[in-house]
Amino acid sequence: MLVCADESYLTNGYLETSIDWIPGLKNVRLRDIPTLIRTTDPNDIVLNFMITQLDRARKASAIILNAFDALESETLDAIKPLLSPLYTIGPIHLLHRQLSEKG
Image 1 (cartoon, rainbow, N blue to C red):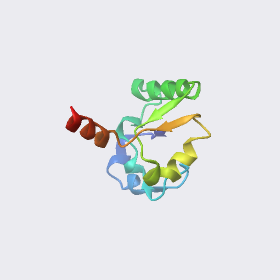
Image 2 (cartoon, helix red, strand yellow; image 1 turned 135 degrees about the horizontal axis):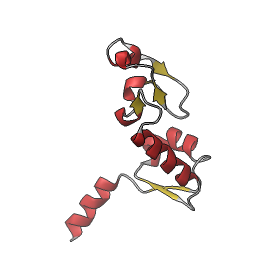
Image 3 (tube, one colour; image 1 turned 120 degrees about the vertical axis):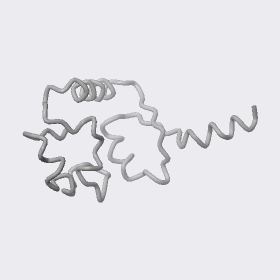
Image 4 (cartoon, helix red, strand yellow; image 1 turned 180 degrees about the vertical axis):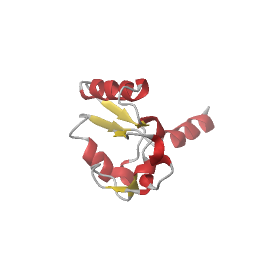
């Protein structure tokens, strides 16, 4: 979660800061984090919704992701202990294309 005191972080170069505290991700800057969780309000409704959904995901019997093991294995390996069991079925857009051609 990225919560800043004011909106100056949008223009002062702060978003260029490299982050190394997200397991499985390399060469990530703060600007690469989705804008919907970059907020100056810790009570932001979207941020709190995301936090609630992540808590619910931890309790799920399984998680299915649109991810490709061969390309994203390092990130998936970091997520698996948190969200287990984890199944990948991606890339879905290629599967959709195959199904459309058969149809």
